[in-house]
Length: 286
Image 1 (cartoon, rainbow, N blue to C red):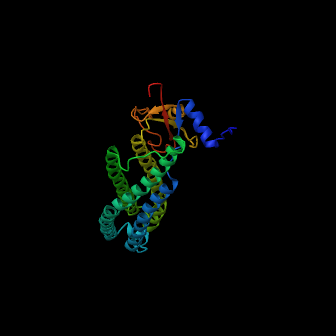
Image 2 (cartoon, rainbow, N blue to C red; image 1 turned 120 degrees about the horizontal axis):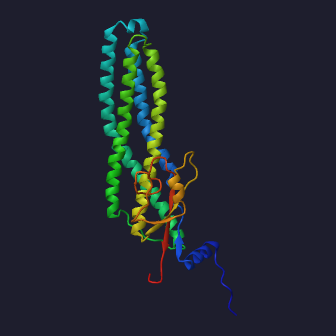
Image 3 (cartoon, helix red, strand yellow; image 1 turned 180 degrees about the horizontal axis):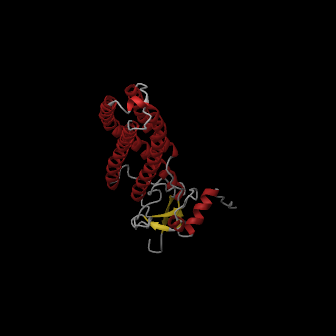
């Protein structure tokens, strides 16, 4: 007497999907851990810069009363010398450190993204591990572009910080300026602004790189389609992305994601928290 075969819930879901002519994998989301690590690595560099700018500028003003500052050109000269010294030092430091930080980020994101993709494809295939190329040819170009862009972004943080602090110092030396009191106030304020910019860069870049890696490796495994999923977690969602939710697109013909006609992937635009779900579908001739 034959016994009835019982399937696990995962296998039942797989069979149901297959009978419907499509297989759907797990969600491909970026690693929050990698976002946090990238932000922390940039933070370590910024903290050195914050400390040294504060130390040098406090020493330059040396608690000189505001009324003296407005009348003493030597204070302005000292401030200019100190700012130029700081600019040279941190331009060199950011040049030396930014590539190391980016390389480490890319290694971590590559591993996390690949692991997420493998889990997704295993779910899609009903438990079978689908092989993905370690470094598809198209991905090499993506990586080189990401390195260049991220190094430039990290260096721009230092450059913008210096420009803003330099302006604040010069304004503090004008009639009515309060000297060191103005500089301290601006340092406190602008460090917070710089930290927020750092977090935005880390989030946006890890999301973009993760999506790019997963797409190229998914293609190498034979995946051609994905389902766009809207996160519904942002305070100001893009109407265009809400309309894309649940729609299926091919990896070789990406949807329009911005009002300027840009085509791309979920998570590609700044502050976009959308994600993709890989899908396989076939017809009678496949």
